[in-house]
Length: 270
Image (tube, rainbow, N blue to C red):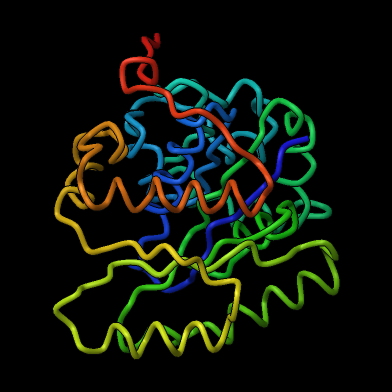
């Protein structure tokens, strides 16, 4: 049965979507069957894997409205082993629609259960807020990954996030755990980096991954080309960092795999 991991931080601009897309891609490259669920109305994870969010797509919003089921909404990406439940601006209306649903916190959990066995890992890219979409993700998920930017205000708002997770654990999902914390956007020119990293490690302990994601131009460019960093520039420092993170993730999950070549990884899709 697939493991569900939610990528969450209500603070925007911390590398949440970048981490979700690129870790998911490397897991697929290691032969794992992976599904990304894009729950952010901005649709950045959707465009990040080469899907045009401006086209007519079925999203979680259509599932809420009972206009399609999750299998009809999931589409294959150009990356072998990687599928996505896409998002677009229509998803912004889902918060209002969810309020009117019975058991509104469990809508995503109920639909994901029907396809969970088809994947090794399901990665949920949460919106940068703690609204009903995020609560749905937390209710459905097994674990969470928290990307945190290596900057002065890194811990700002984390107490609110951890309180939300605590409440979800108490009332909606007793099994939710922290998978890990990823330090992102490391700038070696800043003297604050080591101090911030030390504070974060003191707060989260062994949950913090050893791999730190650097601030990297190629990593920032990749989404505009509609491909993850592995496809855009697999020799860049950003790609090497996410490969290291994927290996660390697999090791912690007592999993392993053989890395596909770029030629093997890219496939033709309709």
